[in-house]
Length: 341
Ligand SMILES: *Cc1c(COP(=O)(O)O)cnc(C)c1O
View 1 (cartoon, rainbow, N blue to C red):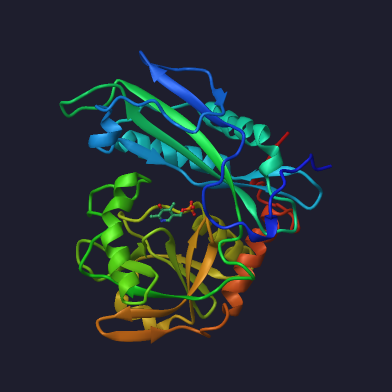
View 2: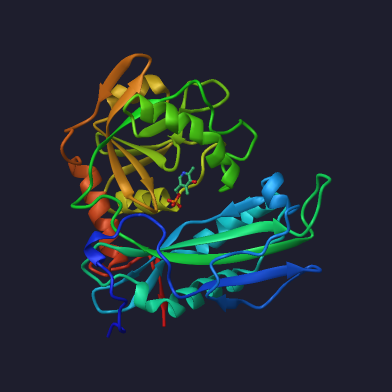
């Protein structure tokens, strides 16, 4: 049965930082990762010449833990986050870590903060933010000698209260999120810093979400600033194939669900000219799962997709199935959940 919970207004959590009891930290020195240490300290003691600060040698992950219907605590596909973190680490010259170290870290930090895992039925979850930073003093360009890997957790509400709400997006051709052979397919903080101007540009024009085109030809759909693009066309689930998009674990999971539902999954370049042929468009990622996008502004025109008031039938079905698996309402037939004891 579920353990004693923190006294929080679970129904009204937002997507923001809230202090919990512990975070977990590992230090890399002289070629070796230390054992994990749980700490209550929310601050880092960092040398001002640390490469993460001036050369952006930093990468992160985003994942969630849930309380299921029968009171278990589970994490969604942590091995996939480990795999992606390794790929990103390699690209920015951060030393690798064993899968067991990462998954143990996840389990330990969740177990230490059990009372902050939102109760089943609230639609909330425990968000986890693993990150790796290059530390130690270094001025010349080169990878750091030392690293810190940490995971902090924070309880978050469903991204959209009272169900999934459609949003409007803008295609901003003025700003690229990534370069053709750059780090668009890696979860590095620098991609987000580079995207802030585009986000501001869209926001000021009334579009809370920005959709990026491929940086080489500005002709094919890449992804939204913080989430992947999916389009529904007839019985097909269509998602872009591109070197400069972040491989979303939510997208991959939803595409498997789409197949299970008898849909055809197409991963291929999507010409921006094809947009009007989609009946539903979604922005997909861990935080919101699927956000229906009902308007896309491109070259002075507003393209419309479905109802402005509610999500379309396919996106609703995909959302309900994935969240149903996460909360233990639907059988986890692909073994995506890892239990935390
Ligand atoms: C993290 C992220 C996503 C979503 O990935 P998930 O694994 O589904 O959370 C999509 N796009 C970008 C740019 C991201 O950083």
